[in-house]
Amino acid sequence: KIVNVNFRSHSGILDTAATVLQCLFDAFPDSAKQLKKDRGLFQGPRPGIFHKVDPNRLSTLVSEKLHGIIVLVHDNDVSRWKRILGGYPLIYGIREAKGLEFKRMILLDFFIGLPCSVQKPFRDLLLGRSTANFNIRFPQIEGILKLLYTAV
Image (cartoon, rainbow, N blue to C red; front, side, top):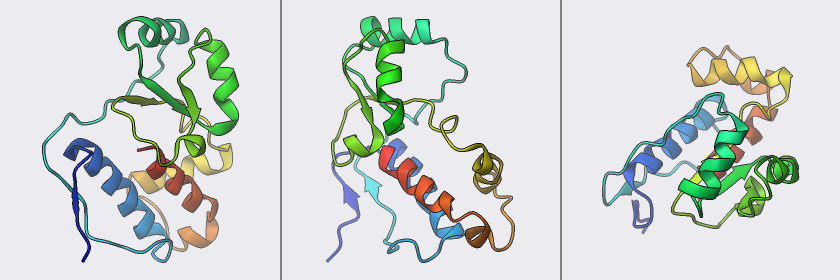
């Protein structure tokens, strides 16, 4: 029997993860086994989005007000962000953090870290404007969606 009640995450996170999975299955139907949508035991806040946050302000936030928050970035950007955020120690690559659970986290620069060649097609997919044969024309986006799902 498969249980679809998630005891660790709230609905805000689960709904975000389900949206990422729906994009994955719409564009790449054979990419993973499709299960029923997970349900949370309680409502929680929807994840927020910061746009063009000043690194100095972010450094102050993570070291003073959000102390203990986990920052996830693309694996190859970990040392750069540790330097930018003044040596803040709780910065992990997405793959490095896979399987770990955090109460609070910031996913930083995910879309900026994508190759330029896939940024527009990725945006089109998220906005429901993908074209026929999307999975054939942009196969690398399958892995990017799976990485985003892992981060969420």
